[in-house]
Amino acid sequence: MQKKDITLRSGLGLARGHGAAHSGTHHWIAIRLSALALIPLCVWAVFAAPQFLRDPSDYAGLIDFMAHPCRAIGLLLFIVASFHHAMLGLQTVIEDYVHCACAKTTFLVLNRVGFIGLGLACVYALLRITFTA
Amino acid sequence: MNVNDRPLSPHLQVYKPQITTVLSITHRITGVGLALGALLFAWGLIAVMAGQEHYAAFYAFCKSGIGQFMLFFWLLAYVYHFLNGLRHLFWDTGRGFDMKLVRKTGVAIVALSLIVTALLWVMMECLS
Image (cartoon, rainbow over all chains, first blue to last red):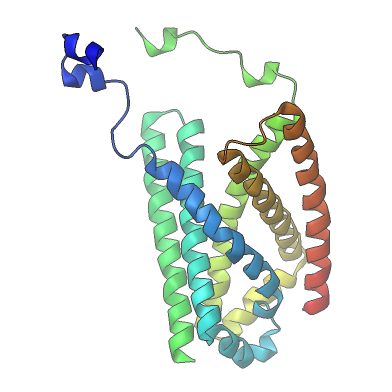
């Protein structure tokens, strides 16, 4: 506190170079919370996978299987958690390895648009399967 | 100061690959691979919605040589990223940073990934 009181630098001068305030930890926490959520979801998904990928002759059975509320909600949670996690992870990779500012910004926007778009398409498909079954 | 005049740290290539660095980059590579696999996942879900013949096309692709190849490596990436992710979450609690332990858990993750992937692949072949 003593040090802060005697400095002649302005608040802005002190903050410069320290990154944007308030949101620095958001990404870090979000990627870990989504990872935690994915632990049970991934275990369930991998063991349920053979039942999802069933022979096309049992198409009606597949629809019934997917339309069950527990599985539909489980799949919905899996889509949201995994797509969010993938988007955050790919964002880190782009930030670390794409150095040209123009390409970086383009890729970061495409990453966000792509995963939100694809995620919403998946959610739409799942809801339509569930509600028309 | 011009950005280009900044001193550079030695390039990555001068370092000998170690289990720590190799597993670290593998975590990222598998992560990117899994993210690209989301396209296949989305195709499958949309195909189910679109109808039986679309689903049959998706199913045929999955059962084809290239489809099986992709699914196998996707499963391997899935298992590795899952197990190594658990290792990362363990580190986030501030534990397990002793170098000997880091190497041990690293070797364990690689071995477990191969074993679990093989078991799951056999399970899926038997169930489907």
